[in-house]
Length: 292
Image (tube, rainbow, N blue to C red):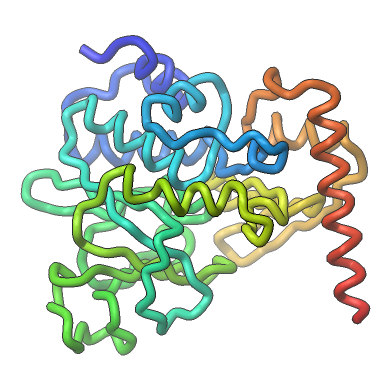
């Protein structure tokens, strides 16, 4: 029986009875997680990046926080393992070039095997698929259009030096509606230690996008909410977009809590003011760059 922090984690995602491992259970857990826990970098923006130990991440998520891929997929993998699922961690990397074969190491993704079938599972992309995808080449309509192909294959044929089932090298996940439409990952199993150096870079380096911009994303049945700085965007599966600009620190806090479901009890008034100051300065710098 699952107890302790994992019970609190399940409560956070609204699951009272996860049951025994099953395809249906995996899909339900994934959807619940994505709908309730945001991809976000609040603590990195405030200069206190959280560690990526899965148990610590589980505690953070259970307490109402979010995180980025190392926290979200790390915690979700730990939860699935506690529930009896066969989970494998993989080193991945997001990129803007859909033809790239690079695996940069800046992303942690998962596969889960049930009854002989492997599934691609990722709750750490923010705007990724709302449910697991069969780990086989194909195009998948899940509100938005997604794809999977063997790493290095660009024509959908699976041709190239790698095996057509992706087992020798890896896979490319495609999401044409994302600012980073490709995520490559290696088939080889990974451990959390494989992400330590990259987490340090992403959470502390001045050129890291996690330090340069504040953002939050939440995948839900009606589409994707994306907050980049002070610009809030809702993207619907039919292509509709609704965008507005936040005007104050209070509006930012309300948006974080209501749109993205992040608890704010760990943020002091000084934290909220500092976060808004960073958001405003980054926004002004972006506006200035558009005039160059």
